[in-house]
Length: 277
Ligand SMILES: Cc1cc2nc3c(=O)[nH]c(=O)nc-3n(C[C@H](O)[C@H](O)[C@H](O)COP(=O)(O)OP(=O)(O)OC[C@H]3O[C@@H](n4cnc5c(N)ncnc54)[C@H](O)[C@@H]3O)c2cc1C
Image (cartoon, rainbow, N blue to C red; front, side, top):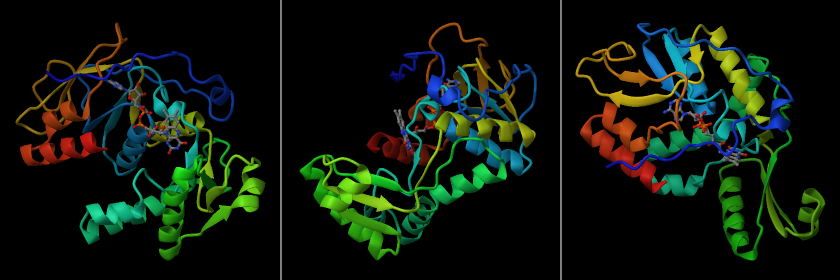
């Protein structure tokens, strides 16, 4: 049996600090049962809303379903650092994928701050964006070696990074606690809840719709690809809806989503990938 993650909130209200600055919460509408959409996006976080925006701007009929409210998940509680980096370094990505694929991943990774700042400007998102660069500081000696290797690798690829050591590091971090830090001048920082709310506003302006307090509890595969008609409709994919959420929602795990929509070889590879990372 699939074990579902518990996404019961520790607190239901949005983070007060973020909520009071920048974009305000926006009004959304309940889903109309029987409506037709090309794509249903589950979750109004940065990922779901970015996907919805990209699709809506290309004329796809999109509806976003959110169990709680816009930015309720990690997106509204993050630290707001937008780095040109991911968990895995470009070198690790090169070692994992084919040259063509790793080039595409690394290229995209390098452009993340640029893509975000361009989105902020295009949609006039009020999210306290600071284009000040990012610092990755080694908080213990064991981390310094990895940071040096990363700095070498990034510099070799031509990225605007500097390894700050000792006094230079203390000056920039304002603390003697860190001896080594990687300064990446591409990075930006922003208020993540305000950014998420701004994306939601852009999604609505692009003609898509969003329903909050609506939990997807079930996904079903249907042989016939087509519109998504909630609930109890045979077209695929089918989402059973329960607005408003009566109990903690059942999260759609990578396994359950992959099982619902993907062919077997792709499903196996996707689940292996998400389990690994
Ligand atoms: C404390 C913290 C700090 C972080 N700091 C940073 C940082 O500085 N920089 C950075 O790049 N990343 C940071 N991250 C990671 C980053 O926040 C996440 O990777 C990103 O927000 C994920 O976005 P998401 O849209 O995938 O998920 P989420 O923002 O979690 O959105 C998922 C949404 O789906 C909804 N949902 C779930 N199940 C259902 C369902 N069944 N039906 C309907 N809706 C559902 C949830 O309510 C939620 O709103 C941080 C994360 C945390 C926790």
